[in-house]
Amino acid sequence: MAAPATTPGASDAPAAGTGAAPATPPVGHPDRVLAELADWQRAVRAQFPILTGTDEAYLDSAATAQKPQVVLDAVQRYLTGENANAGRGTYRWANRTTALLRRCRDRVGDLIDDPDPERSGVHLVGGTTEALRRVALDWLVDTLADGDEIVVPAADHLANVVPWQEARDAAARRGVTVRLVEMPYEPSGDYDVAALAPLVGERTRLVAVTHVHHVYGVDMNVHRIRRLVGDDVVICLDAAQSVGHLPVSVTDLDVDFLAFSGHKAMALPGVGVLWARNRRGPRYEHRGWQGSPHTVGAVSLAAAVDWFEATDVARIARWTVALGARLTDGLSRLPDIRVLGCQDSLTLDSTVQRRHGPVTFLHPGISAADLGFVLADHGLMVRANAHCQGPAGERENSVRVSLHAYNTVEEVDRLLDVLARLDTSQTTPSYH
Image (cartoon, rainbow, N blue to C red; front, side, top):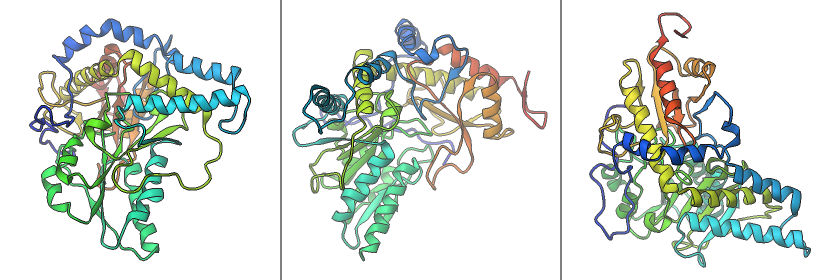
């Protein structure tokens, strides 16, 4: 999976007017983008209280994002001024909470460019994993017949693998045999659409895909999947690493389901979204008794969407992609570091698609766990393990740095300096 490779989306830009959504690298050289947005970025960072006055660098936003002051203020205001359950009372606080939930759903629809809010549904769930499992178990199972097939991205996050296995097993308990087809990958980590073509046929019922890969950091060019499978096949999109990181348009992507977690999009933990288009197949409905909604989570998510709109998600994408390019360029100059994923996009002068936040690498002489501890000792918070990747993913644990709008050039340069000065001659790696 990690060998040097072809370029994700490098020669696949669709013709104008097709409605497809190609990968969107930043306009201009990364250094020029970073200089252009420097004042904007300083103003953005100042809005995150947890980062004020700390010498530590938070480089783990793919695991969870930090929260801007406006989100914290919205939560505080709600809990101290009108906290109530929704849909269960006739008094003002309860009615206000019900309206806040409705507003959250509307704002999410705005953020993802919902083309038909009257038909589609924004369902508040616990997170990406729950959303994908609900598609698999509350909707897909009942549509499956003997011999049907599901395309599964087995090198993506386990949350986009296990639910489809559960759907297959649930169908088997009813006497229905369903086959899981593994999504093929290019050596770069991108989907191999040419190899996928002969695997998709009249029995393909659903294709599960990821928008931005949580290890390789690239836009997986899912618009190519719709062109390949045609108009009848359902596509379910894991957007956990794209919503709030770059502009997301379900209109352009033409997917049927989209899932993301609030905590990765600067809202509170425990709230997420399942968006269902309700165009192909039966209308999606939650099964079972729903209980009390996560009202404060919905309040935080609506506030986060407001913040993204005010801050400009397109600028967030330009900053993080340019900053990631500075990081991959620096890593590519270190003799002991191997960056995972596409090798053609590492240097600053690359003209192909770059990484949208996550940058993952290995050191041949230091385990990922040990390197994670060394970096933590220098105030650099990264993730160092298997990253919950599926069974067809990387076989070695690795270090993932994931960037967001609040990360700085100085933090990236500091990380590169620590890595450059590692002393691997000792049993336990040290820094000098």
